[in-house]
Length: 316
Image 1 (cartoon, one colour):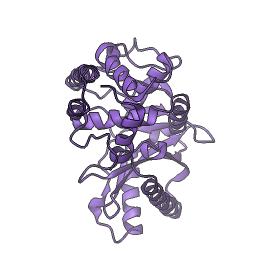
Image 2 (cartoon, one colour):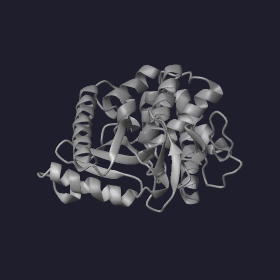
Image 3 (cartoon, one colour):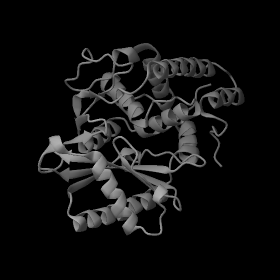
Image 4 (cartoon, helix red, strand yellow):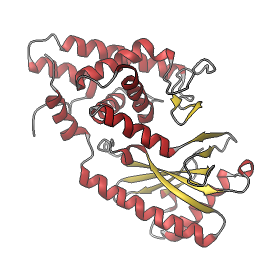
């Protein structure tokens, strides 16, 4: 049997989506951290923060409930004013942020501050279950719309948190089912233990399908076309306005909507891509087979193979 949007919406609302009041509290906690960070950096005087731009699932409103033992992730782009972008040292900046925040949060342990990331600096709030990843970015314009994100390896890439947020909001306005479909895709990816694939990758694939095919006709069919694209067309790449995949040789090519010269999936390994494609093929076949079954119970059983034992279309 086929599930209606109401059926699948019950599962998304009751089991997947982070409740609105919790999201608001996490966002407020991020705000307090940013106020503290701004104050300590301004007091130190080593760097000038031009703007904070919130990013990621928490800001877009697509966060799933945290899994057992895992934190809720919040992402923030921290745009700095730098006189010489070619001489920007992300490692030094991360160490400075850690030193200043330890002084600002004396009740926290040093291991709650993670300066080991190649591109981000992490702060963990174990009491609330929130983990904030701060991405230092060198502002390229007065409004901090675009910037250069650096890695410790010396590489840098032009990108835009603002464009990423607007890109998602534009596509969610065109397809009201995008957020729910993305939540289902993220749950499937977690349940199948698909390494290397991020929620941003999933979001961009779904957004590309909206551009190519229009809004999904329903949640179930939206999932089917997502799985079908991965198993059949992923090797062609995901591009947006003006993008061209021909110059890339990576296992998966998903071009940044803010910079068509940046492949956001460049670090995905071929073995990870192959596992992603194989899992999508199985998922497509499973849902297709489930659609012809006569009973609710056996259909639910098949869907549990894709989303786990918490899959249910019954109201609690």
